[in-house]
Image 1 (cartoon, rainbow, N blue to C red):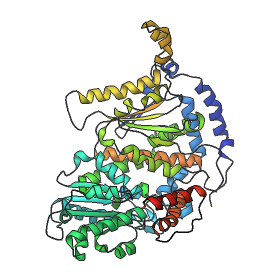
Image 2: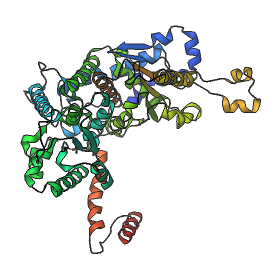
Image 3: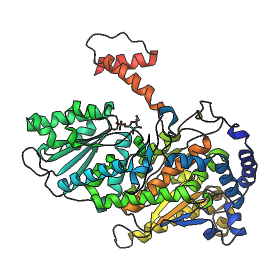
Length: 543
Ligand code: F6P
């Protein structure tokens, strides 16, 4: 049972932040920059190839001291040690939380229930590597002897979002002769469109599911098996065209996949923290074992930084605390993630599960309702597209939306002026948000009086700019681990458990009850609320 300390909002650290926030709410970033000419370089951390500029946040040295003090008082240091050492910190499921062990070097020792798990991790990585080399080298043939050209990953949530995000992010490193598709939605359109132009003789399915019971994934996997067998006829073909990634060997065998073609992982890997496990098989097939291992090394570097760096220079801790600052002391409801890198187009979607399934909680670990806000809504789009869509609201709307800008010095594709212009935009947006444009400046420019309120930019809108050299596999690993650990930091302060997700269960149970009511030949007796009953009747009448 976790300890029951004084309520968070009654702690001296929280109360001091409340008082301090009153002062900072009345301060403009213009004033903060004017008062400290070194601010733009001082409030930065340059670590692991990430230049993390947090100077455009509504903070000063005192804020940082108070926030890191809150983290200390919240037991973050012990919580980090507990996670890394394999303690069962996923309290409601009685599990260790060891995604960090998935990227630990071979000689590391991480004990779970008296056993060092690192050798198992590397055994699976080696098995993935052998398989990836065969497929990438054209040696893994389909049932009719044809070379595999298409890889279809079937999974959902963490068994989809990580793989698809990483595939898109690292496309520049991928083997272009292989064609990758990702199917997640139970909507038949997703599967139908994914295979519409594929030849079953040249297609390999990866059924990725930690539990191997998830309705969406199993429905899609069954349709994939039917689709393959319709063309290949022989049930023996399944062994050449289906592999599984799962923790549930029995269910994999029951589905008809040879467990020799199964890549395992463990209950101490959460779905949304699983992209470094065998769930990353499609990533390894795309970018190759060497690049995959480079990505793992990037993750590991950030793990070590998080584990050892002092809080005030610790990137995930700073990111987590800055998010918490606005969430709890400025009433901000959301955080926008704005990568100025087209390859990161799925990064915001990936972060939505990571952050919102983790910290979307309303009770503390000891089951008490919180009286403060927990996880914010994460959302975003790659720049510059968002600028022509929702940035208006960020600049001049009534909501405070802290932004994470992510940019790279060197482009993946050198093309005329494109990269300089892209970078000009990311720097300009952060500048405009922070400093805005005053009525006096507009007056001086001769703007008509009546137009001035419309053209005024209040500014004082906070953002972090993360500048990296290049989007390499290692850089991606560092970025993802940065967000993973920032979520952990916030969870520790909010006293919630970031590693379970009971909130997704009720809908699953109700769907299980409703499905037979939609499919039954006889008129079912409906016992839902009147709205749900009417919707079901209408659907049955018109389908
Ligand atoms: O329903 C939520 C969830 O449990 C996620 O946490 C998980 O990533 C996803 O479903 C998929 O689960 P599985 O890998 O077991 O199919």
